[in-house]
Image (tube, rainbow, N blue to C red; front, side, top):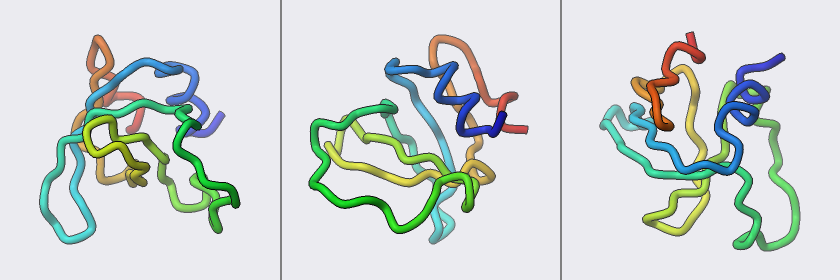
Length: 87
């Protein structure tokens, strides 16, 4: 089972908070959800999350989709701390 599959199973459609390092080196806190399809606009992503060790998350504050690299995650909380699942 990949990390992405494990996280999808644990998080389901629940809200969660993730703290990660962005590509430019700055730290970002994101409140999000997995499985949101309301804002999709046809087509498909040109890549697989598993190929890049990433997860596509719906940012509930910005109301848009974000890609989070799992190796850059510092903390993942959904009721309890789930950061250990990424190691």
